Image 1 (spheres, rainbow, N blue to C red):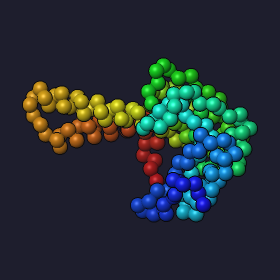
Image 2 (image 1 turned 90 degrees about the vertical axis):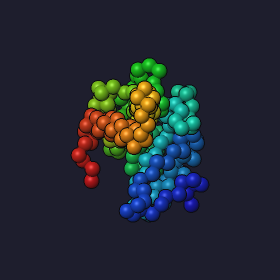
Image 3 (image 1 turned 90 degrees about the horizontal axis):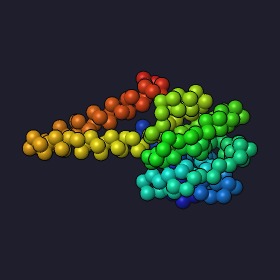
Image 4 (image 1 turned 60 degrees about the vertical axis):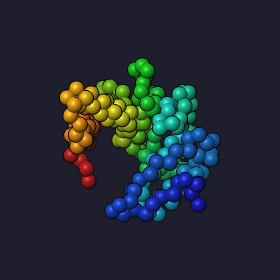
Length: 204
């Protein structure tokens, strides 16, 4: 049976068709064992699995640590991929969850090295705050999934604040107008990222 908390719902019109399983806080061998079980369970429902062998630096939704993540040797990462057969892999390359305090120095070559030995789509966590040049370079090397959370949350919150300040000045309180304005700002950010990543108009 898969580890507790890793149940996979049957795929269908209203179900998930992919899952992220992160056992990176476990020793590598235990991580592999659990990930193998999750992949088998997910595949029985036609779902894909994203796996991790290293914790990504930073705290997200109260989970994680600001301590720099330890990176495994390339041979260890490749053995994890060959053993677990995950569909997507999220390595640590100097990226971090949350807001970067300074421009991150990324090990982009690690993405190329992994993909050259084991062609698997790479997931980039901690995408908020990276430059357009970094995104383009990483995508060209094999990053096929980019996680953006902090930037969307910040846009959502700041849009609310801006609207409410303006509403207070005008003394006009109309919740539907707030919802439309905030939605528009979030949609614009999401759309700009899709265009940058080359994913716009490619939904199946």
